Length: 172
Image (cartoon, rainbow, N blue to C red; front, side, top):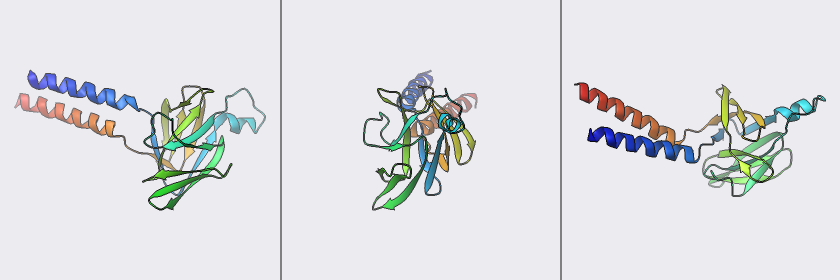
């Protein structure tokens, strides 16, 4: 009984910790990342009325979306080049850049007019392509990226394995 109580407490902590910064951390797979906003793409062909987002790249550790960022156009290619101990992310649409610390990992944010928002859902299209949606109704397709595993997901998996082990131990 005591083991079960401890397991529930551990599971609650993991779930709360995992949802605190639930947006996706991305990494470029081949030195660049392509972003295409569906509304901007359709607007090029004369179809209007679909929202177009304001996007930016943030440091992977910036789950509050409050630090320095790289503005990214609704249709843009961002290159990643090694610079010292970090990676320089550069927008080809506007020429701006952001030095990413450590690995070339980043978060994508969308501006809702008053604050930056993290993604609300991600649909993987292939190993290196995804559609990302945001709470303000905008969305974009990212190509040449992969999601980086989040520590909360690893802890959730570990807690599930511990629970399974406890159940097997109890039966045995």
